[in-house]
Length: 214
Image 1 (cartoon, helix red, strand yellow):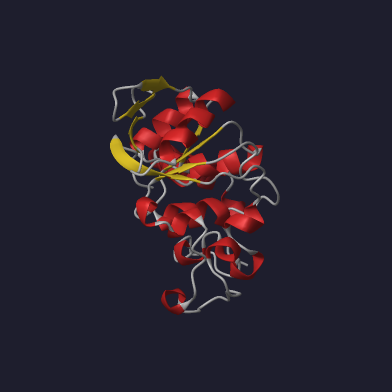
Image 2 (image 1 turned 30 degrees about the horizontal axis):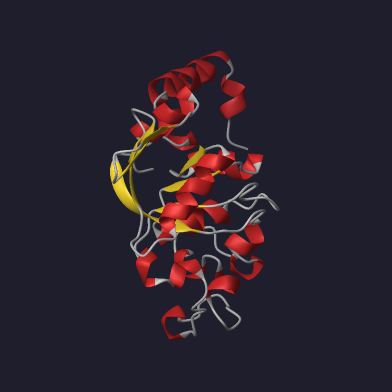
């Protein structure tokens, strides 16, 4: 997993509450478990005017001009701004995969569904919970003629707007450190490779019959 570094990114405002994981990545795209390739189908049913299928060339599909991701102001956005209960519904890990594959690194909302929130950290995404009033203010700024840019500093736990406004945010210390170091569950386990090998060698000596080929 890529380490999370300080960056400045464009904010894409998705002014909808209770966005579920089937809206984030519809069920027909769940056949692959490669973690990549889902970006073109992110928010597929809202983003396009036709019905999407796996393997389809999305570059030739008709776009919904009223959907935020298709607004020229938000092209290349790395920060998604949403309303409450983002990521509700089924627990599919494909949802954070699709968001990350599109290019999003941060999601800001007043609240998240628990499983989706946990899956974000495991896949290199930073979900930030801010109070509804602050989120409202950000929506106001993001909907202007010019795109809103925010500098995200995970180490300092701050969001800095172009006008100098600094917004602090909370994050679990352990999850924060994992993001900063680029460690997912597998990466954390591999940090103990020597201990694991030592344990396996000891078990072979203590109980050799467990390792006999049958």
